[in-house]
Image (cartoon, rainbow, N blue to C red):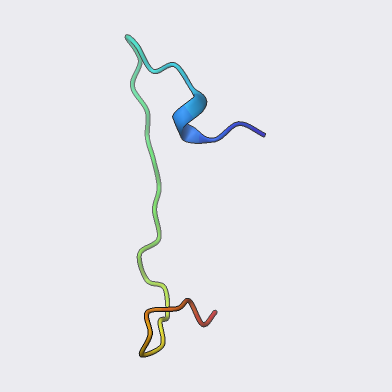
Length: 32
């Protein structure tokens, strides 16, 4: 599977959906 930095977006548009509602502990580690 390719990652987003491996795609060529020249002359294209991209829609990126991101979920920033991630639970973190006091050390900023993901707890989900």
